[in-house]
Image (tube, rainbow, N blue to C red; front, side, top):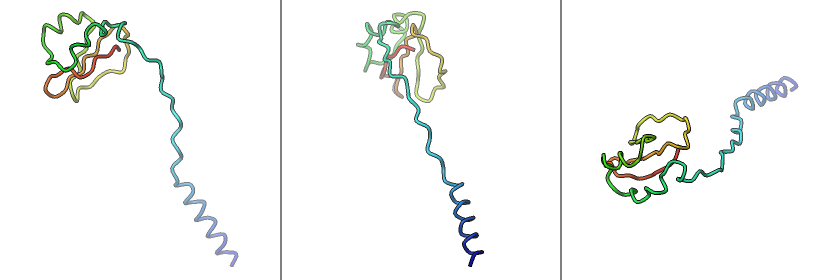
Length: 97
């Protein structure tokens, strides 16, 4: 009888060890950076338009054009304008960073 109790306890402990731990709560920064720092505030009228070379010239030197599936670094630069395009080359999002 005692053997069954020990065996049951061992199985219970073994199963408890396999239970995944809850992921830690990660707080993302809530500070929102306006588009003023990279000049995007003046270019919001581009959203919904096809991307072109004239836009690239107007955007200035700190420009990053992001296409679907493109690898993007995580480095942050408040002066850089990010232009996110959809599959058809339409501007979907302007952001600083």
